[in-house]
Length: 306
Length: 194
Image 1 (cartoon, one colour):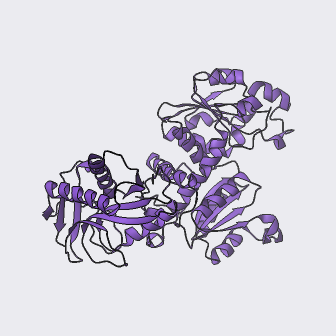
Image 2: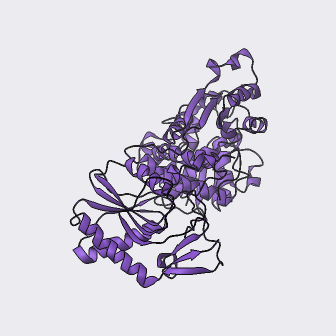
């Protein structure tokens, strides 16, 4: 029973059963989020610290709301307003936070492995909210939850992940989780954005979007990180949009009833056409709503007295 | 079914092979449910503004039986809800492992209704405290009443049932198990020695 682990750092070391437990627990919290009084006393007296070294609105707000709906106390730490600018190391910052009796630390950091380092150094539970290009486990879990809530099973499910897979922690976490649950994952993008050895993770590589979309049940678009332009990953935004932008025409290539996902924030007219983002097949806003329920589930499962 | 050995709220499944003494059989349970259904109707003067909410999991099954029985008598289906009180337990922050969460489903507005909570065994009263808090977070019922199949005593909170299937005096060390058909077992209430 329970997750039996102190931290949530990566989806590689969660079993299919662990993932199912998290999704089922999230289901109960979805009900709480639909109530008039969206609050339960489960984490009363616990402190959750959001330690975000990278800008984030969605994920931080989602964790904050999740913790508050569980009656935990929430503190937001961001580097600009803390002693990090004075040269304090990650571990020292975290130890200070821990000394203030934080039960759970939610970490977003630009370096891969930051959450792991932190977890080894502190007694508090650590939840990885994105570390560099490595992983973003809670995003993948909310994506899985959204797929599941559309009555889709994972065994044999065909999922296309489209875009800058190489620089995407969302893609990596989703690949780990989806393949573990028996889904067939295709990654699609220009060769500069697909890691060379990625087929070792059990995915199929495509460079042509139209081919990749044939027969898929789920289209998962990644955000084109416009700030990476000029690093020779793609010639122009326009050319990228023409080859890898999701249009209404392209959605028709997928299975009827296929859903379109995006972790946000979306670049309208770049990786996703506005009419697709607003269409019935788009579950982008469901993902945001489900994110709170999934994070409530994770916080709840990790809040055992340990 | 939850045995009720330890004083805190327990939801651990039965460990199995211990020999027990049957204190209620299928007939006893059926008659108790019928009587409670009548008592609920009598006390509330019919079914107006009445709703039943079962506490997971044994209470949910009993609530469904009561709703069916009330339907037999009055010819009308009254609203029924299911409550998971896990998030309201008073021992949550003390546990190493968090208990499995199941869904709360109360698909109607409870404000201004007379809500009858239904549980299988009334013991320390802590589950009922949690259920009342959970219910009040969903709205402001006009009244909360309590129906239980078995009252085994040893209250730790000032809580009393309005409708009781059977009072069964027990020692703290004994356990009461309620087996129900809905779980694929034969209907019976068993008392287990420590």
